[in-house]
Length: 303
Image (cartoon, rainbow, N blue to C red):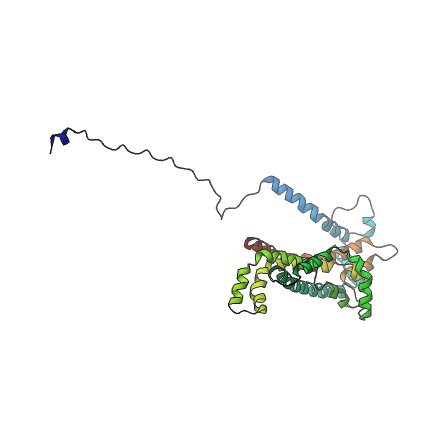
């Protein structure tokens, strides 16, 4: 070993200072849920009470007598005449036949509207054909026409067909709606990828098969919402059924109209009839509300 190597100072590398560690922002995991504060529960409770107040008052009035309802202050709790008033309203208004007619009318209108609106919405959203924009504008434009303007010509048309006082008079004008078509068109425009349709075409699927296996599954959440809205609207419709039908072949709303035609209408019986007419809607929502809300959330996630 040379003298220079012995006398050369031996230097050692100084250890590097550790890099400062960056703190990542805390992101809430997918499994964790946000917890609502006390103010949220207060606001939701107020809205729930305001929404339920008319229904609760209807039930209270239906359980009292007409004389008690005329007193001041009005009753604020339930009485013991609910089933008696319901039985009287059922017999006087003939609600048995009216319930059957309304269920048939509302069910037929709902099925046809959901089917035709989904097909028309798919055509406007994903198919390319001449004058599609003009036809869509005309369809939306019909929503701006008040339905009262069509009552007289529609009644004359149904009379010429010999359908007076028949259920098809109420069903035919609402087999499909402009709102349903526009609603389904807007939903399918975002929820149904065009590539999925093209892939089905490449695989040799016909138009009917594309609609059945591609369009309907993608549109199921919107179809559920449209079906619920259409059923409620058809069940509660009063203007056209009261013109086209009579007490011999009524819907629920036409039958309930007969309860208030006396010299001194019994308000308790009228409220009992209104409660009976509302119960099927409440039962339907309790049975299918969870599925409908789940379908809405599923559609929101997919969209």
